[in-house]
Amino acid sequence: MKKVKNILSRFKTKKLTTFFVTFGILVAMLMISFNISFVWGLKEEENILEKLGPPNAYEFFFRSKNTSIFLNDINGLLNNLEENLDEHIGVYITDFLLNLDKAEANQFFEGEAGWFGENSKWNPPLLEGRYYTREEILKRKDVVVIGQNLKKYMNDDGKTIGIYGKNYEVVGVVGLKDRPLKWDMFIFFPLSILSEEIADTVGGVGNIVVYSPKDDTLEQIDKFIVGGNSRWDKFESSGLQALSKRKIRWIDLDSNFLFITIIVYIAAISQAMAIMTFWIDNMRFEIGLRKALGHTNFQIGKLVYGEIFTITLIAYIISIIIQLIINIFIKSVLGVLITLRFENLTLGMVVIVITSLTTSIYPIIKSFEVQPTEAMKL
Image (cartoon, rainbow, N blue to C red):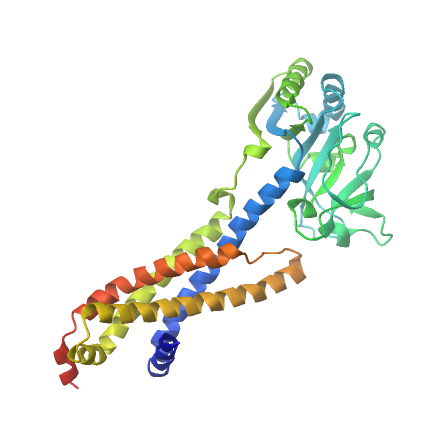
């Protein structure tokens, strides 16, 4: 409390310097707090998706150099799956981009085109309705399953949704009641109804995920590739990896946001160091008087660090409050939840200590240079 009173007294006498130090650190702390929320949110979603996602799943890329399989031979792809994969296997093709008729013209949503055998049981968690069936795949029924955040784009009849000018029956809604998932903005549809407009969004390269309740996914992938080699000229595949082995990395975050955060943080520390050095120059009389009264350099350094630590702590508390307000706005407008977590507080305290230590080193050294005689100059 005493440190806070000191900061308030500084603010009254040194309004601009205190404001700029606090504001710079506040912006940096706010961006750091958002990054902590993003990282732990992604890790939490990774764990959830590993539990709810397809079993023993592997993904890889495939294509034919001579033809676009999706545009020119979707029937050949379906036949390859039917003839070569066992009945317990499931497959979906990712990275399709779909424009909904009721969305903005430049707004696209990710689509997954699926196929599965008679005994395949997996599908994303459902909030409403059901998943499309194998019979609907074979009969090429115009049905889709949508993520819960896409319900607002459904047609007025409440039963269909328009995609590239064509209406599809919505048979189910994917999602969880208490937590957002990446699937909340997805559209799932049978591979057999893949239209030219949708196929054109990925060109000739397909990103395919193969999954199995048994431990035979790699064997099934080998059978798919053998069938592809016999069906298409210059067929090739690459990039095989297990979905469950993918881990969230810093590079998975928005690189621009990370870059800006780092730059702002460095700028905030540099600004704080410069202003605190100026602050020390304006406190020469006070520091000199304290030394004249018997305060040691250690006590003076402790005083300077305490005030910088308090400023950093106040800035972080304000940044948490601002993030809470921003979270409410983002949730109500975009339907996206950026949760404040325990890690925001624990890692935040680490950042506070590091920031205050880094910021205070040079000002503390400057304070050591102040002599008791400074108190006699005024």
